[in-house]
Image (cartoon, rainbow, N blue to C red; front, top):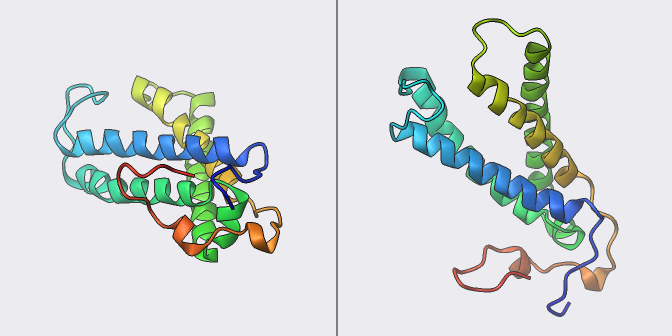
Amino acid sequence: RGGGMSAAPAARRPAAIAAVAWSLAFATIHVAWAAGSTAGLGGRRVTGVLLAIDVVAIPLCLLAAWVAWRLRDDRRAAAAPPRVRRLAVVAAVVLSLRGLGTVQALAAPTDDATLLTRLVDPYFLLGGVLFGLVARRPRPVAQGDRATPSECAPRALGEPFS
């Protein structure tokens, strides 16, 4: 169990780290919009339903980052409760469906498609792919190689990651 990295399939750890970054970047833009930024919105502020979407999206993005981090290698993924992997599967499906709808819209663009829509919406598909990679079942790990619950718990600030 030492301080070394556990064996991880080639794509699990990089996909998990990318999914964490994806989630935090998405949370950041939703925080900015909820706080009144007009970046990428053509000078308009979000209000009403769009503001409510931002307020709901922020904790969902943070939850997604936590899920991806929790499943970052086979050892931790094997020790995680099944609901954590199910959350990753839900994220993968929802983001992929949203992204695929965008790909179809981009294939037949309309005049009302904004530059933001064309640049940012495929980001949903990327998130779906990343969470799909993270959601894979972990490879079997030897009993002694499983992470303990304390190893899966969030770390204190300044404490090194394993």
